[in-house]
Length: 318
Ligand code: FAD
Image (cartoon, rainbow, N blue to C red):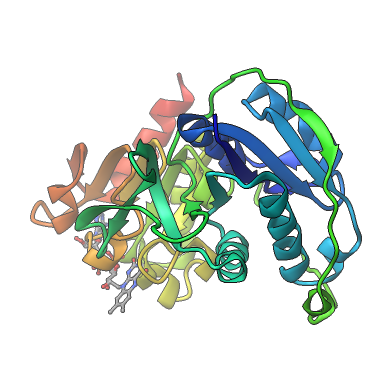
């Protein structure tokens, strides 16, 4: 069976959920071989093996933290040359997409970004994408070289599938460009204690209808009652009510949670582009004609200042 490289997104050995989702998809098209780089790379092996990695290639070096993405591209190129995989899967994070694009150029391959599904085709893996503000679903296949595919978080379930997970050191020689851009400072964002927006199973979002930064407290309270992340429409972000890092949509983040609750959001196409693939969509809006109701599974016509606190209280009692 062909091997499929999976680029591991981890923080000091703690594997992110998006990588475990990649392992589920990788198993559909071959045998997953994980590539873990940087501090704690070897510590990822047990988790990766539990989720189907037959092998874990590791390389720890200060360059991965000290410089921007090129050392990671060098390492992935070395892994591609060592394994000759059927495909390389990378999480669709901002960094993942940059690594993937640079890798595809290096190895002379085609790239597909933001895939939401993968299947085996007669001539190689076929990726499904949701395009044009999620108005169309396309299927595509890389026709040149080793396919490099980035996959959106929440596109597949995390599945336990115990495998060998044999750890092997990857031999990497850094290119001249690897040390071209040095990281001079890292400023961690203050933690809200909530899940990361693109990885959250539940997202609660507020829009212009929330009518003020201070009123986002009721959106946050609902989110906290559900263990959810908080998102915002561009109107709310542009008004300065919520940070841009929480914006969902065409010019913000794309989310695909199990449950998306939109409060005071009209459902403009640019907002839909970032949330339309959510599994279950709930909207609270006082205008029964709001376009968001065209795509919801459950809609509540009502004032969010009445509905959201009641919903929060009800959830807390369960
Ligand atoms: P509105 O459209 O003003 O809707 C507010 C809604 O709240 C209304 O439906 C109203 O009925 C309801 N409401 C008001 N008060 C209450 C209440 N008390 N209780 C319940 N409901 C209430 N938008 C994004 O979100 N993300 C993007 O990434 C994005 N990118 C864009 C890119 C481009 C190039 C352009 C041109 C636009 C983009 N937009 C984006 C903007 C988008 O077109 C909309 O303007 C925006 O999504 C509207 O945000 P909203 O739904 O919060 O506000």
